[in-house]
Image 1 (cartoon, helix red, strand yellow):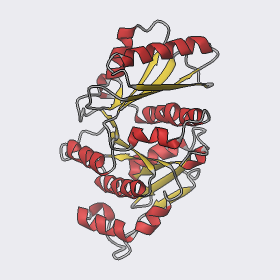
Image 2 (image 1 turned 60 degrees about the vertical axis):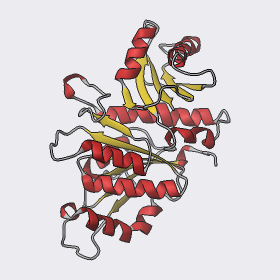
Image 3 (image 1 turned 180 degrees about the vertical axis):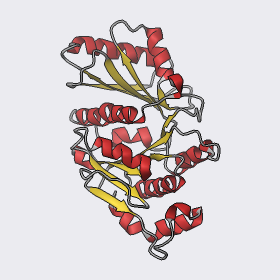
Image 4 (image 1 turned 30 degrees about the horizontal axis):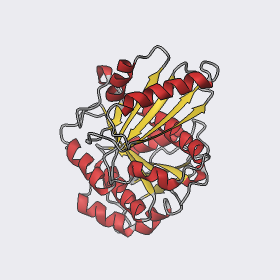
Length: 305
């Protein structure tokens, strides 16, 4: 199964926070990615988001779904399964994002992810965890998403796994998600044009291996030690393996600030840094795309598994 176009990719926002991200994406020239918003109540969904689903309690319309318990939500989702499944049935890659403090949205995300996996759709959950809520067991729900769907991108300043740190505990979740789309999706299509098949990419989020991802910015002044520190400091998905078997490096640069040769040399340096912790059989692939974004740095997404 190959990815024929960016029309095979959908980004779904669930709940208030997920819909906020989708609304922003709808104004960010990501016209080639299909956007969808899902909630249990009428939320402020931008008119540019063409697909939306409000899950209603068909059997007690006066009851607020945000106040029902886990088993009632499960029952309501099961009764709406056909409608929910139609959102993803024709896709090949699905990004799903929500706030971990919104437990109803987390439950919808899990059920949607399970449906997608059964249909051989590549599912990439993005969990936003930026609130300090003492009543939420963050680690429990992160493990639940990981177990049910597979490796999950965790955007957090609550240090669920102790692996992400941000100055002043402030985090721009939209910037990170925007970067993931730029560096992963855009370059995925660029790479696929060089005959890299969908099956070659599926290992990243198959759930069969621990996956580690980092987003970093580097330039010609960056030393190998700088790169090592950034790769650890800016992890967005942490693996627990010792020696990765596969590494993918996707990068974007602005040709007004960096030539092709300069960008390739930087990419090779990143590859050498990552290669230090691998076995001889480790497969390393990388892609480079030039964009109009005004940045003097090479922006790099690394994926190891």
